Image 1 (spheres, rainbow, N blue to C red):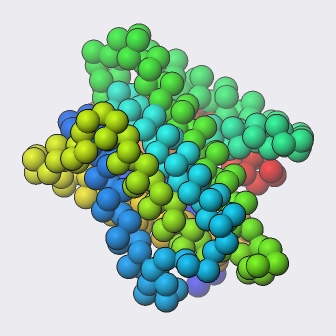
Image 2: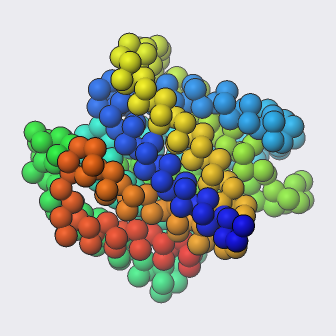
Image 3: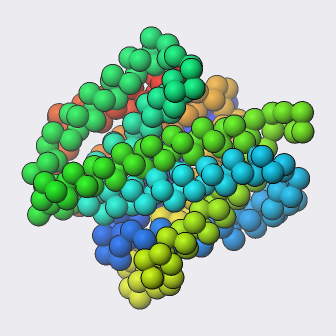
Length: 308
């Protein structure tokens, strides 16, 4: 099948749109911490089983301490710190607006690279400008409230926006660390298999999220998800299409696409898929300004991913 990787990338974006919507509903009803804890505790054993079936190892015991440390740090930054902010944004701002703000993560990745002495190309700089303008346009109509949260106050809006930006920063940091951990080297000429790297990241995140729950004196916070059948159903749907199917499809996309940059760009189209889903499920009025902003943000992210 030609362009199989590209098809997998689009399916990944669609999966993430569905999981964001489901997690947003569950987080609004039960809280971000319980849902985040629940999805990690469920995803880890499933991913370990997939790793055992597909790679012959449920845990990558062959990795060096340096690679393992990078993957653990990647999981803590991207899947704990970043997702705490993102899940709060999902509950407050809703999945559409949160996904648009999350589209800024390639810009933060570029910022990290600049801090390391790697200057961006003109195309990447243009992508940053387009994404920033797109996010501003998409947010212009949301400050007074949305169909997702009609009574949203300016303070809630600001904290929700900060959470989405924290999610983008966490995603960028997690990607940079994971890329360094999976890179080829003398110890592993072929690099680290993405599925095995995902298992380590998810396991580290599950432990980290449990520490957060203990700090809040809520070690069994995920019980809030189990007490409501509708919340449980939404969380299970989100787990299936987010950290499980979404991650699996993203790995297949990266492995089989003709160009990894194209695959990454297609996976960044989640906000576009969110527009019809949001309008259908909770009556979000996107408007021409929000539509243009969303497309600009996605196009800017695509430029950064293609030319970085």
